[in-house]
Image 1: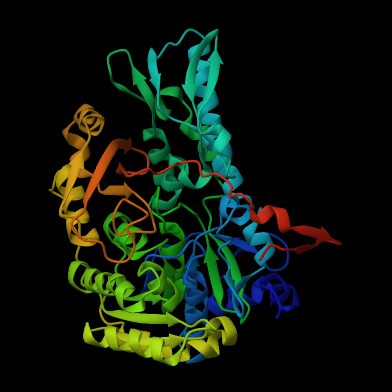
Image 2 (image 1 turned 90 degrees about the vertical axis):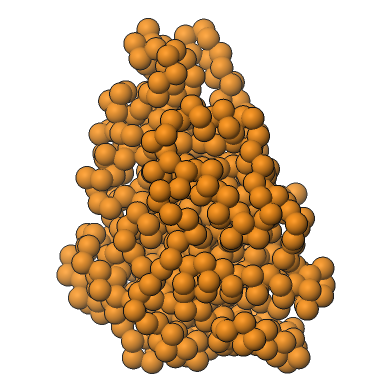
Length: 528
């Protein structure tokens, strides 16, 4: 059986001009023959289809694969469709989970370039982030004119490196504790992905809080005069990237915040650009629906005006058995809870895509289909990994049938306080009995002032459980969510509530993916 990268190398992608022509895009900034950046466009007309998933196993459940296969399937049934996906981070690529270009016969190409340096967007975000850090320390070194007493903004890099979680930096003879985040957790990443356009990006960059002065007032990137220089570094990164699937479906791949520590969606700019050219746009949100989909709805849709016409929930027998400690019927509660959330909390028309694995039995697949039907959601068997778009035609037909007028209800109201917003997400979406706030979280929230109550909340928690405890799999009950810290992301425009033990800089596993990688004659082996 061929590996994903062997399948990708055997493909014969079309010239990027031909892909652009399918959508009517005339102006391209080429990065070789099959990759280009395009000018943003904001006249969306397409129906948006969100792809999300149940809580995953550590290996993931093929959400990107289904998204890609669905887009190919929609084009196969005559629907003019484009993809809007996130860019992979080098952290998972060289770590444990892998990349984000799909798999089997449902991939975007060039998969090696997309999973590695691509067009340099993540490098630009890293550089802009670290320029800001350097300017903070430079200001302190030259007399500290802004009277910065506490620095809260971390450096970043696009790699898993646990040794950099806590470091000590020395500025002008004064040492302080500091640390690195992974680039996908950088506020610059979230800021770029939620910006409406380049002018809005510059404004948002200026609002990023880097620390607090001796009077407890925030010090921003604009106070340092850093936001214009940061925008210079991001001038190309702010433009969406255009690539293609193995079957020639246009794919906009842009931005890549993680969903467990950020909002987990591709950029607003790319989604709206795709929706300005296609009739249907398939986009995805990271990890399970309690993380990625909730943040897609409550954060991305709230600030951008985007409204989905349908939501696809990816499920696998493997993940349901994992959540039930080997018992499919026990693990089924996770699927049922996600269906209920999407239908009754967010008002979505739901189609369940059962991503088939070779060892799934007919009895197991029937049990999943019966559970979906019983709870008011159509389920469709998806075999796009093996068959590409042909394996997703039935899913495509079900999506077209389900995709009505765009509609959306939120888990909380704009007028709720931050504490009320977190409480509503925890109780409505996670199924918690309540929220416990640590003294540190309460103190930090109080310092932020009442203005932050106007912002959406982004809850950082484990992706493996509906709770904040990764060991509570399936559909746990009777649990509380503990908020141990609250952080103000003024540039991104949301408040982060840190629940459970979430790390902003992941570590590599005992045997990282990097160990098995090779390169010979320019061809990469072991990437996936």
